[in-house]
Image (cartoon, rainbow, N blue to C red; front, side, top):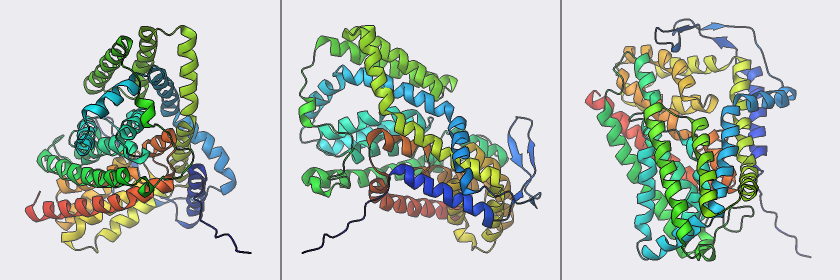
Length: 459
């Protein structure tokens, strides 16, 4: 009898994150505990005193404490989790009207033969939006991305990539990101100074990322078996038959409400700094208005809202699991030790490579603390003195921080935006990494070249 060949099946995303939590808890036994003293500036920004590192009593977090820490992580991310549930419910109300199905079908017919131009346009739109907005706010748009991609014969990965990586380019290059201004304040630089190289970075990363997505998408369109999610169960599905919906007058009303709501959301985010909570509020009103103009009764709206919220549960829960990593590191008091070791090691790196080395350091540190503000508070005060002594400009140090703070959020198994997108669309983490791994390598290479260029010209 012929034996069946065993094939490796990647574990569920939850299992991957739990494994990471166990690994991090073990690190709290191995890495010496230590802390920097912290102080608050006149503007209310918390910073560390770069010369104040000192050892503290070891406080390991045992693996048996992980369930307790998970509950703390869920509580810590409640400001993301509950808005995600509301956003998921709101989008389901709009999707259930068939408005997106009708107009994506119409768009597909109008764009026949021009599919290659569709992806660059979508990526650019979200990249520009990402200049001032964080990726978390767009998790609810993941199903829309999949619908748009499927209309043109692409897979769910392309749908996720167009939106997630689009916003990621704008956010990670930091042209007008709040964390850029914060890091520059810590470095004693004018807010948003040195913008020209960040704009150049935006253009270069946009070209590289779009080329990569289009290349993959066209390969999948020509041969669906080339998709990294081919044959994988549980992926959000949307077929060409789904887009064969007749456009009705009430669809136009739903579309009008959607566009107005999105306009209000962007205005509020840019003008008043609205976050995920305000986003959820706007989209909840949008769902109610779209439901009524389509002709739904209150019970129809409620039924579809619950369905959408239920579908977002997996994504919302994994955001809390990801936050648990930071909880364990904080309780174990090892983050500052990691930063201190990296800062000391940077002194041994040649000047030409210090920019890329800082980029790599920030990538690794971001694996420990995914909060951009938190990372700036720890890393910048420690790396700035090292940069000054090494002949590296503070502006370049800020750019290296921003790259590290941004780009690795799209490969980390505990990054809230990434796991939210994957959870909302059913794309397994290992399949995403099969697509994303090579692109991340390109990102690191491009970022390192730009930072080296910045060092050579004295940026």
